[in-house]
Amino acid sequence: MSSKEVDRKKGFKKSIDAEEGRRRREETTLQIRKTKKDTRLAKRRQMPVGAGPVNTPAGMAATNMLAAGQVGGGAFPQSTGAAPMGMDATGASAVGAVGAPGANKLENLPQMVAGVMGEDPAVQTECTTQFRRLLSIEKNPPIQQVIDSGVVPRFVEFLQRDDNPALQFEAAW
Image (cartoon, rainbow, N blue to C red):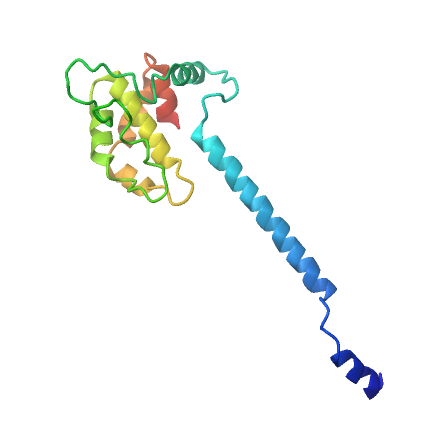
């Protein structure tokens, strides 16, 4: 090329290189795929009520209990006047925001451990569900703190029981 052509090219705006454009498109596509995958996993971990049919006995019992509203709250009798474990005075779940961003995820851990170690099956199921939700947090679930709390052997006991399929399901999670 002559110096005249080089001077002429310098006067124009630099165009986008084909390789640079391809690299950007691939990065964008990859990022979009990762985002979609993360949202699908997050939705699956939340276990919505309308989830498809579950063919195991424990899965069917858990689905039925969730659909009836027995697991997420409202399964506790209010006869004693005191709010049950993990519930406030209105009967709403006080631990429902455990998986919410910015919430202190471990502030109710002692109550959840006490509920799992107790003898009331309804409280055991509720607290085991709360542990499942706590461990289903997408980024940095507090796995080691839950292990250190000593509830894992109790979850194994729940798996061996066949009198409460919903509890088995939640413990298996």
